[in-house]
Image (cartoon, rainbow, N blue to C red; front, side, top):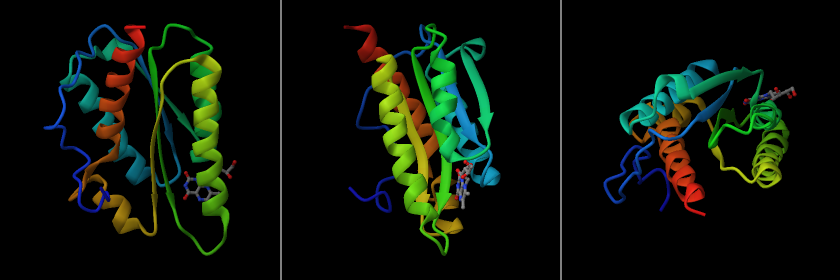
Length: 162
Ligand code: DLZ
């Protein structure tokens, strides 16, 4: 379903696991800080709403979305994390930078997840303009950060079972 129809903060179709036993890392990009700050708030509230403890949520900032990959890698050198949430916002500009960053971040995050065998969640908005990003950072389409938090809880729960 296209995200213009789905509300990113609607989890009525699933049962979310208890986040209390798990430790989460959040890597948040400073580019488009108004948006990524809203994603961060959504992620924290999503984790805490489902039982995560404040002391089990470690947040680090990186300059841009491209650095989310390294940020996740740095956190995962500490084996105690159960899942990492990467939050960023890449907005289409006049050059091909958008494509390079989006591709690199998606591939890089997958590679880090496989390297450490831990869930690393892609909470990155890739939009045509600022309004589309605002709509998905606590606006009319919900909050991508909250969606990423719920995904992290679900994946930490699945990972703990195997
Ligand atoms: C350079 C750049 C550009 C043009 N646009 C964005 C963006 O929309 N969102 C984002 O998170 N970061 C952007 N960056 C910065 C890159 O992610 C990265 O920080 C720099 O290229 C330095 O490696």
